[in-house]
Length: 278
Image 1 (cartoon, rainbow, N blue to C red):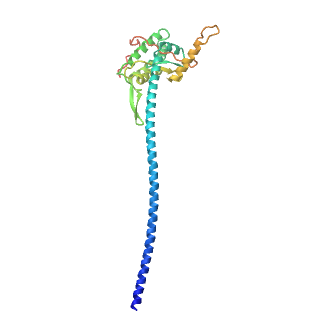
Image 2: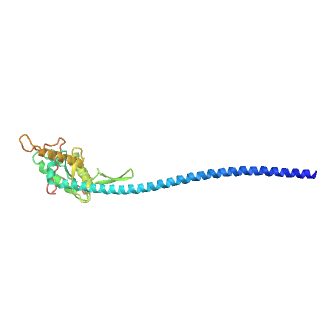
């Protein structure tokens, strides 16, 4: 009986051992599967890393190439801009070119900061009649042109707009108010225009600066517009007329307002009150 019990215990132990082994085998199989899955994921990750590394290297090479190209384009743009400015300056300084352009054409040379004498002539005609208003207007223009040159007169106020500081004309400036009161809004507007031009083109020297100008649209002329005008002038001057001689160039339909002459002398005008110092 004891032998049978011992055999039974031994069989039970063997059965439990077999079950434990089977359970262990299942666990090992699961672990192996997890390992295989992890290995596959690792291989895929390595492949992605390799691809990303190559992509990054290519992007860095492309970035370097684009940097070189950008630097080259900036250099060429600077050189082209310098050449363009030199061409503008050469055209402005060419007196023959200026004479051809200023024949009542829409494209011409405007002297930035030079007073327009028409409003002054109109104001003086109303005040003094038709006898000597030209002389009075010339004196007045000469006087106020000299005032424009004074660095001490800077009738601008600084205003912050959208986080940026900008300069605007001060309408409460005593001299501007005097001009408006004595000679009217047109004269005051002409002075404001000259002040803004001086402040933009030559705030330190405060002398008149010539500029290629589109009088029809009231803005700085582009080189394309200037060259097109010059091309038309050349074609018209070389086209033979019916009589066999070179045809004169007719004026453009746009029209250019005559430039205000620089009246000599800075003598104070006869009837003008001395403006207060600003």
